[in-house]
Image (cartoon, rainbow over all chains, first blue to last red):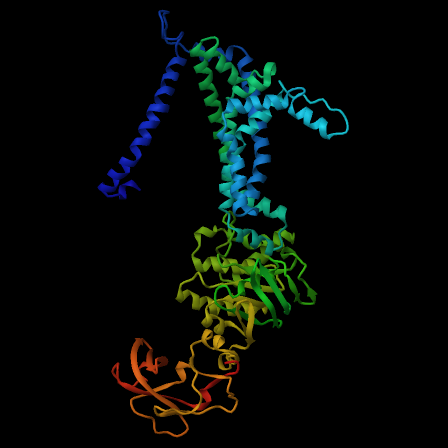
Length: 287
Length: 345
């Protein structure tokens, strides 16, 4: 396509693209390259300790089963959170896009994006207050229910999932909303005129046509959740050891940057592999 | 196939009366046009028959059943949308087969009927294409095939041809009529194009501000419009607000026997004749004016004649028009039987 552009247009294009690419180079490519370099070293190249290039950090992943098990645990967490986000977010996006109109939609949209506006650490500690024994949830439930219940979700997997779902739900809602809104209402009318019920319309028209948005949202949730460490650490306590928290430990506690970097790149490779394997399947489902 | 009857149907959206006590009959197997300016309620009426909206009052019958409380998906209708509303994620065959799949007719029967429907619209070889690979006219045919493949009791078309360019539109009018004749389905369509309505319909209904102004065979409505709006909306009309008899500036208008003091008179532009001098023949209605403008449009010539601040339009074969320069005095004449009496005025 660029071959068809006049030199003037090409120059303008270059001018518009350069700042973005420059920024991406400085902010992403350079630090990532540095990390890749670290991951191949025997020790941090600061201070006086001698260091040399080695693959040991990557081999460490395979020498014990601990890392692989933690990675699998993180992937399961990612799947769980993604599934929960899809189940909660997609219907919400559908109602926003197809049922509610005008000012009510704007107001509800604001509520959806609200989590983005608060500091994530504050958000997580708020959940801690809600979920702990004798916390807001337990007191609230006991005030309503006629019988006594014990609700202490703190330091458990459900607490981590709740915290993560709350943080990442807006991604699924926003991407699904955009995809759903793009579906012409007359398609739904047409399907109804041909005798299709609500479920058939959802399964054969609405879902296939909005799948790209839903998948984009799911990916936006899945990838960061697999590497997450803050929510597991604060809401998970002792059960909150995940692949992400181990990486964090390498950087801030053990000060073994090379191992942390190597583990990060293994995570990146695994996530890319998962996406590469699933994308053709999803593309076929959409066709 | 079934007849459709709409009885005293009223629908309001907030303060807006979209349909106001509309009654119309659509006999079995006919082709009916709903005509009106935008906002007149014609699409609302079509969607009411389809079942997309609940009525505030009134009843709708399809065949032997009163259906006003039956949801769209149970009404056994076929509908074609203005945007065609083809499912972009499905092939042409799957689009056409959608309604059959919902009805679980079985794979073999489904394939057979998809093939039949596509053959009917002359798209037999296009089953494997996706909608985005089709031209506008082809999409329209797919939408039509999809609407009739389930043998609905009534076919509803919402501005079926408005998205096509003019040449294609005329072709599709003929095609639409052929298909409708061939399967004999009761068909109701909405249009704002009066020519299209006249060309296709066995009966038309003119709507204005949610009310059905006049309904009847196109020729009858064209010749005997019930009010000035109907006269001007369906074709063109020169409205004469002057009383009949001799005119002070010379000329005469012969009043038809049915005219009263309250009625207005109208003459279609194509029924008027233009001449340079006062026509001598007896019994003609005639009046003079100044030729303000003459427009050549190929086969036809359009002349605007100014008279007492009013503009009268005359349309004739261009070669039949006398050689008169703009600004000259001309005479307009017409046969008395071409004076239309509009009862309501």
